[in-house]
Image 1 (cartoon, one colour):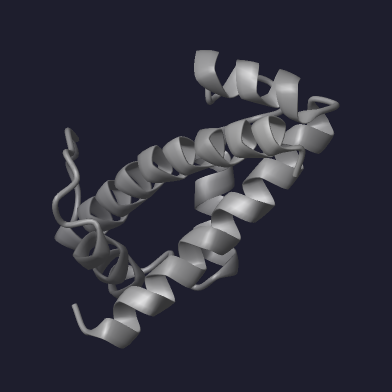
Image 2 (cartoon, one colour):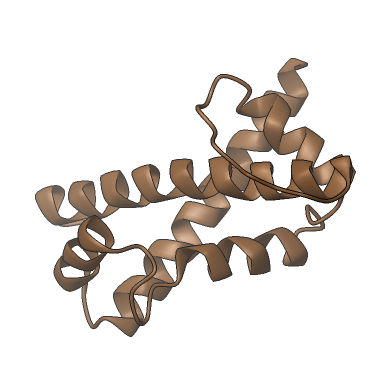
Length: 120
């Protein structure tokens, strides 16, 4: 991956984390309840991580093979486990959403912990 692509990926990830944290904290009425729910179940009522990721990909034009390739290139070392029957392009999109969701969850938890610890 070229340096400009890495920077673009970081911007995309930071945007996703920021929007997701804001959304979850608002829906669950605060950072503390949001953090507790994220740690327990990222698909809980008001969180819906996989739905958020799918919508984020669609809103940012990542819901295609080229978008999946961009995400997978950036996260090529991430562990992945999928069972899928369909086209290679569709499998790439499923894989991209899965690894991005996992990273998004980790970064969202870190962000909320940091905000709570430092009053941000």
